Length: 440
Image 1 (cartoon, rainbow, N blue to C red):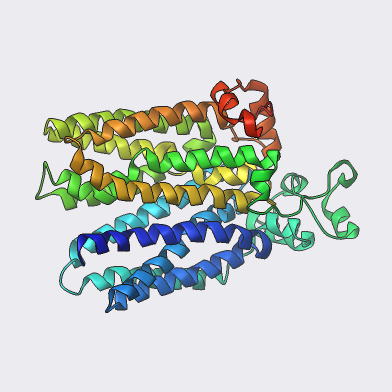
Image 2: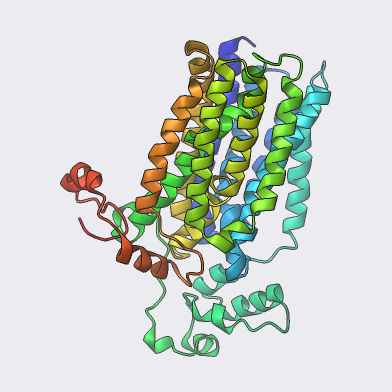
């Protein structure tokens, strides 16, 4: 393939991811989280197998699209599933494992690439993903549906049984049940809910359009989407995707090995910091993460510009560590904490679709900008982007740690919200609610 064809093959994965993120939210809301996960594993298995067996470029292209569909769908559904089966006080810890596993997959693929990128052995790198997906499908045969979805879809008795099995026979689950939106016949509801008369009936499932049209959900879509965009535009994939070519300028013989070390460190750091979100809060972790990445970007810019290996490697390490503190794991858990189960699928689809679009932009623009700009200057751009998102997140993202429901998180945010005037000017004509304060 020439460079244009190679770029197309790379981009098709992110396009598939965008489509997968858009369609799977509705499936997860209507048919269940478990059904959606089993469905997406079919794409994750057939795509890599097509890539591995490809004899023509169009077959490879189809495989890349299928792989992207599965990956995009997985980044929407899996965090929802994990959040809904996790203990309420440990959602940050378990939610971090989405990013831990993404990082682990990157590290494994880079290790395989280091040893197998010879002759036709590269096909085994791609085929490995298909084998992992097949094993995942087998494992999902033994997984339960989330109690939250069951309760909201006319199966309250089954929901309670499932939750008790997940938590353990001797665990008191009444507090969790009290926060469910339960649908079903009155007799079943009375068995599970002590004060049904004082609570509103459960909301019907919300579509992709509903969550933008209704003010109640629009602000959550805006907040979660902002964080998902920030995750990519602050530059993590410039390190993951292009570290070999960038580092090759100052350490040509060791760039590939350094990339593997960086990927492995990313897994370790995310794992070490996974309990942090439940201890200090989601928002503090996010702001600390972005600040650290901004500082690391400046170090990388200076190190690459001055051909300083020590400064470059330290900046790279700080960049990866800062990403693992917050911006890596936390965006995946916020959707299920800022909206109810009726809208979490559609909200996640919006956020992950924009995340994949941002990934596409980074994948396309980083090589171009890196060639056009003087060495290292690219990372000054990422530092500036990080500063912008730090201010934006401070204003529009509520703290959801320890909150029993999405409404409680937004109520606390509303009481302390400062009116973000730039959005008043930009959005007044369309009467768009700027943030959680519900003022226009």
